[in-house]
Structure formats: C-alpha cells, structure tokens
Length: 91
Image (cartoon, rainbow, N blue to C red; front, side, top):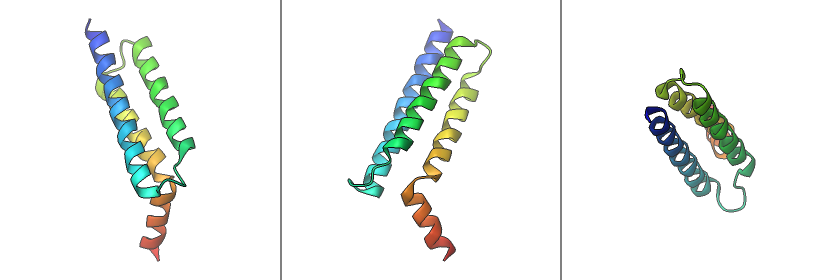
C-alpha cells in the first residue's frame, strides 16, 4: 500500500512539474516557437522515473522526486528563452 501511495505521489509531482514547464514555456516563448521536443523528452523522462520507482522498491521517493526535478531543470536550461536570457546576461 505504501509503495502505491508513493508512486501516485510521484506521478502527481511529475504531472505538476510538466504542466508548469509547459505553462512557463508557452508564456515565455510565445505561440510560434513552443519547444515540443523538450516537452516530449520531459514526458518520456517522467515515465521512465515512475516506472523505475514502480519496479524497484528500494528507490526512495525523495530520490525519484529529486532526480526528476534536476532533469526538468536540465531540460529547461536548453530551451530558447533561457539560452537567449543567458546570452543577454553575458553580453
């Protein structure tokens, strides 16, 4: 029962994080240049982490949430609005 509740909590975190990434990119990038590839990578990564949590009982919930949060940050760093902001910061 505990494993199921932890997996559902992880799924809710993955959905919330993916939705917030989509909202932030839609508002920052505009309608013409939405990063669908990055969103697809984020969804596939979330599915992989959830399936690993479901398969391996020794994987802690905090490890799974932390790894997906870092993965989301890594994906967000390579989108066009963030790269443009870093270019403006350097110049």
